[in-house]
Length: 114
Image 1 (cartoon, helix red, strand yellow):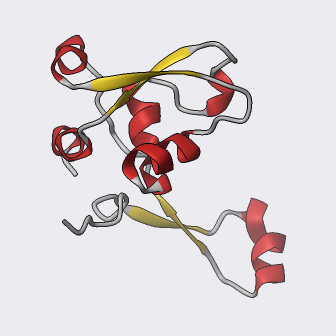
Image 2 (cartoon, helix red, strand yellow; image 1 turned 180 degrees about the vertical axis):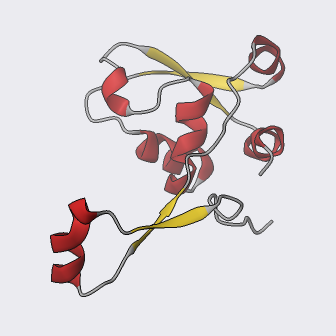
């Protein structure tokens, strides 16, 4: 099953802000294409109960990318683990924290509307 890029359905805009003028000049570009912030619904208790998941104790050196690669074979699916745990970035986790990793990636992607 081939997946579309995660951002394929998000609106884009060109950032021409004066703040980035020197950056654009150094790179030889006129503007920066950026994606609008995604609207992602929070994970519900019903989803957590219905979705099979494994638990993982956060260890030193862990990243969502490493866990996604090990679980799904695709590091780009890191956001699924972050979203499912309502942890937008690794710095919100501490060694010893327990996170859940949903194992049914196709079902999660359908729920998310992928």
